[in-house]
Image (cartoon, rainbow over all chains, first blue to last red; front, top):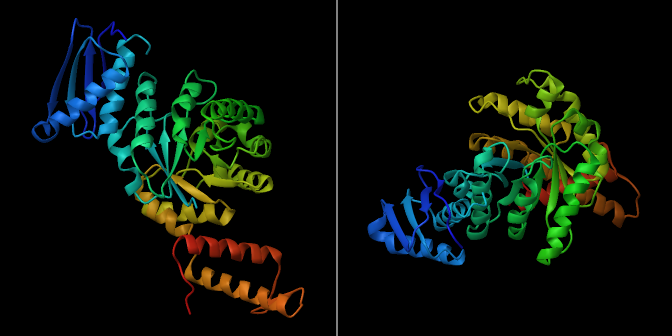
Length: 88
Length: 291
């Protein structure tokens, strides 16, 4: 799946995550999180999973985590992808 | 058992993920009024994921989808139905035709998912003058309908009157809905009490709803849940009396009597039915017979 436009989803509120996605020539994921030291790898793995499930191979993704649970991170990444592919 | 139902905004992770800790018998994940049009897509996915990944234990999950006059409702059902909510709350149900239209689409999606028909129930939200007038036709339109739900805020706007704490303006709608629902053999739930800081008001409002025959009451604030649960639970006196009724009726049967008196009052079929309902609820709440 191709990301064709810049898109974002989520909020900066507690227990949420804010996700930005933009078209790119390769896949990069950047994470900001207050729990990055302890859970950074796990969060990145979840983000990569959702990108893979949705067939996203090229995009710049930025995730600002505000202590979100996995199901919330998954939801926000999926929404950003849907918006970036031009369906939303 | 649904004494209390707590509305939670569908795009607010902080509230959704804590929904099972707030004491209500059911939570209503709201995809309608609590979510702006620009965030409908996000809320739909967030609610779906919350249902898919989180364990709500004994707390039942209801989802308020968008009304059938919007472009969102079918997408809501597509996203939510695989997670098997107990009920879909259908806003602005004005006629049996509205309920049947939702039923037809839910049936289609259930078939696609391999679910038995009526796996997911329907609870029409009655919040227009037309809906109140058609309450019985809506309640009896399809077997999928498990309950009616009164929404007083939109209703009073439609009636062109002011919403008050006393609720005189919704008196007719309340009684009409209770009668319609009971005639159709389904449950009926009362509108939220919207002043979250009025601790006495919520008690009065819940007691009044119970007295009219409502099964339970919804809330927009976790603060109201405890009061609603207490009002809609049987008292120890109710439970003790219910057991006495069942004993008396068992004795009558043993003695070959058609009727029997308890404390000077004849025990007949409606009293037995009510007693059994009280015992069922008491057992569900872990209440035992006192002395």
